[in-house]
Amino acid sequence: MFQSASFRKHCFGVYLRTCCFLLVCVGAGAFGGGPIRAQEPGGLVQWAWPEADVREAGDGFWPQFRGPEGQGHAATGSRPPVEWSEDRNVRWKVPIDGKGWSSPVVWGDRVWVTTAASDGTSDSVYCISRTSGEILVHRKLWDNPQVQKDHHVTNSYASPTPVMDAKRVYVHFGAYGTAALDAVTGETIWERRDLPCNHFRGPGSSPILFEDLLIFHMDGFDFKYVVALDKATGKTVWKVDRQVDYGTDDGDVHKAYSTPTIFSSEGRLELISPTSKATIAYDPRTGEKLWWVRYDEFSTTARPVHDGKLIYLNTGFSKAQLLAVRPGGSGDVTDSHVIWRANRAISNKPSHVLSGEYVFSVEDRGVLACFSKADGQMVWQDRIGGDFSASPILSGGHLYLFDHEGAGYVYEAGGEPRRISKNQLATGCRASPVAVANQLIVRTLDHLYCLEASEAVQAAP
Image 1 (cartoon, rainbow, N blue to C red):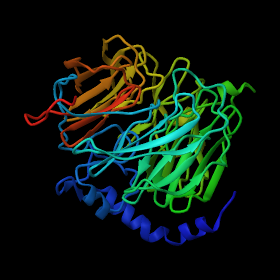
Image 2: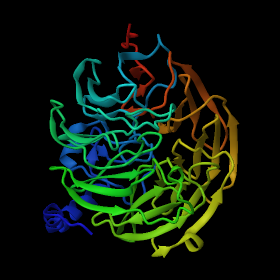
Image 3: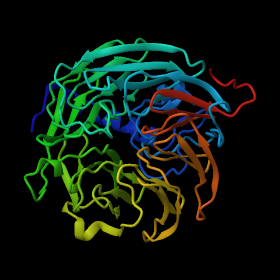
């Protein structure tokens, strides 16, 4: 396995960084002095941000795909509006050029989002003031003289969501390029455009931060690997090829689009890394393969969720399953660690949300379903209609979900199918929403909205 000087430097400081990591995980103060928690604390959460930096970010802390913990949970105390329209509860509305399904990320007053030319020939970034909607940064990062021909109409060339810390915004466009940008000016600190992958339908996996590492998947038609870069320099620290029995040489079955997450099992940190035909757990510091679960599905997309005890995995296309998996173990744990399976009304693309004793899933064709965490049995389902790609989020005890036509639904996250509201924006959503403080930040096909229930809010023109 490749080990660079960056890796040796990284290991030298593991003890001190691990101590800080554990202290922050159990709940250092932020969000107005309260504990750093999502709706449902439990287990060791993936943290890559020093306590002082998180305090400085305040209530504007949504630094990665699916929020502070990567679970789709807003911070405790977040209360975004439950009703909105084009002329109600809109703090600001900003046009975004190009085409991109990436979700926004937020640090303090700054909202960052990526986009690309609709034909993939260039990649760009925006930074927008969360307070005013002013565009602070808008710059093209690079041109793409060669574009992969097998891009799918339902995807974009800017689907991976950035991840950020107090100093840098890490943008990722799959094989087209990865870069670290200054979190104030947006200027490029480093970039990598030499990591090969034929995504075959377009890129989709988002990067994550862990300690000093930027980690992401490259699961394509041809190359399939997980890579960790030194977040300060962009140099490769470790890289591990997938070792999966796909059952075929057809690369269409090899591709995947999921984002990994970090879990702690009895003190051992595990990088939970879904791909086609399997989910694999690696040591996030070295890339060592620890255990794996096999399944029949491919093109896996949803990000794993966990409750501190079990990991909940979505297996992908064609007919997705939801698996509850006990972490730990060694080698193939398919027969020993899968607690239950559910296969009705399971999403292919949207990730799941946990709340209390329930797992919520919005199926791509418009069915919202609630499952028992105890045994995977369906508690209820509601046929909404429409098509869904964006992942739902949980804030203030409510589920927020958006469809392809701009309809936004709010449900109570409980054991009965109670819809709070249905709301409409002008165009549809492929990107997952963001909830910070009392605001809901939503990316549609052509605009970025900040929705806020306040008498002082004036509808944007």
